[in-house]
Length: 511
Image 1 (cartoon, rainbow, N blue to C red):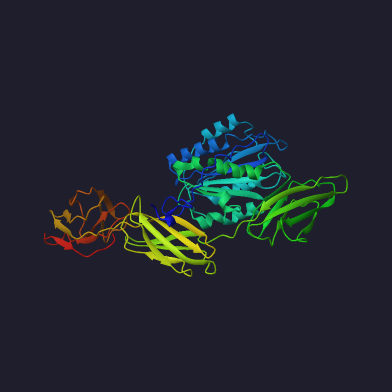
Image 2 (image 1 turned 90 degrees about the vertical axis):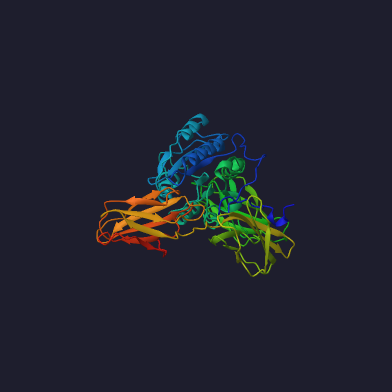
């Protein structure tokens, strides 16, 4: 039987931790007329995404959007409008929010997407998103005023430029941000990008299993675009943001907001008064894991508006570990850390690890003040499933798992000999590396001539080669090539203007 601590509360792919969402059978089917708003996809189309992965992303988009009822063209229409921006060296707006009014047109546009390639220039893509689509204002393809705006970022997790500030600007302007990472994304970084709560708006998934999250992600989008005059966003443990569609524009008056803890003590109701042009308010000093009711009362100078009501539940206090990270690795060890440290609520930590797919499980017990350890005596070039479990004083157990990869052993070249052949050639011979050699990297250069060295890759069964047309004092280097990197090599200088005797070196270098 598998040890309890190795049950995956979060299943994680790759050599960093990834969250795999559970299937949702009952969710993710929008009812007709359920949703209204602007939905924009930001799709990584750079060279870090393989052609196969891009095809899978394209198929996923088509499946995700299939059930939605789309809005027509123009700023005054209802329904959901969809746009898409691709990320590459030069980001591109593939289609704006007013271009596709029906599913057939949208699906054709998605199927016709072509990968851009190049660099992952996400920051520039976000500038394009803001200026041409989501920034306030009127114009072709621009977001409609007073409607929810949702940005869904599809990324392989390779981040080459800073995106925290442009993403924060979008969120501050009321745009809900969701993210799907199909690669080695940084959980802490991406969780700071999305709109809270991250467990609803941040997804880590293997590219071949994206259909698992389709219903759950679609439901998250539905919840953000659901037709309602009063809704709650950015729900945390102690705060939430209440938003509404403006109904007092041009009428004057004010809003009253009543917030009350359900089942709370008498007199716990709070009342806020806001100007007629307000459309949101941040609620603070809330209690975690608590149900609240909120009522918005529009007080108009011209006519009656009925009160609007909603309820929401604040997040529970997060139990450690919230994140687990592999920071360093060698052929026989990995360094592991986790957080946050909660010595007041944690009795002990337990780290269990085993080789994949089925290895012997080893266990390390740690005190509640420790949030890092080094796992030693590991196999080289292997994948380990590592689970960090926290046993809390309340009796609850929290566990997170990651995959950790040890490095490959890279044996060095043990011998190199140069034997002159005539006046301008040498026979280069070496003693082969140990098992796992994929080839040998041969390079040579003349000490007094400028320019880069010449080089070639030789097959793994080659233990000698002939270099000809060499000037005097040519430096020759040979390195073994392994799956992940080059091993230490040897170098020797061929003094072709001396007597024809072999030279050799047995000291290591890094040519």
